[in-house]
Length: 242
Image (cartoon, rainbow, N blue to C red):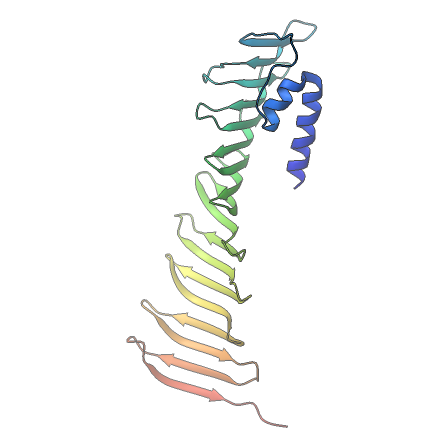
């Protein structure tokens, strides 16, 4: 991905300036002493010509964890590479007002990337149990989500303001596409292909009530179903032979 390549390039450039120890810190190898001469300290401050602190490498920051922080000319933190108290790595990029605009972290073995203000509209790219998920959210409420299941089959889901599922598009392991529309979280209309037959299924409060189908040979049917699930009527329409 483009973001991964840019982040890796930035890490490599940064490590070339700060030395091999910092490269080890970012790239995941164990830190070791660089030669027989080393400097041991709890914090290093980087200042510009005016004496303003522009960078800070700390073994224990305000969170009580190690971090590398860069500040803008007004003293506002803009970038932070660090380790959380749980031992997980963390990356945060902030705007001029100090609001997070990009945050990347690991939660156990799952990666999480948040793009935008997580209090407003933002996107979340995550790997949950090995399943990649892309979620678009408004505040704390997800509104659209794209993901792949364990077999690699995709699904796209849309959610209402209350968090209930409103629509879903799936492709199953047999490459069968399916569109489902929901009301109050309950599926009412399903459109898909079942055993080479195009099917439109419309449900009532409890179950399917009307099914329209067109087979691959052109034959179509309309099936009526009562509240108990029994077929009460069917209208076969056969295509005329040439």
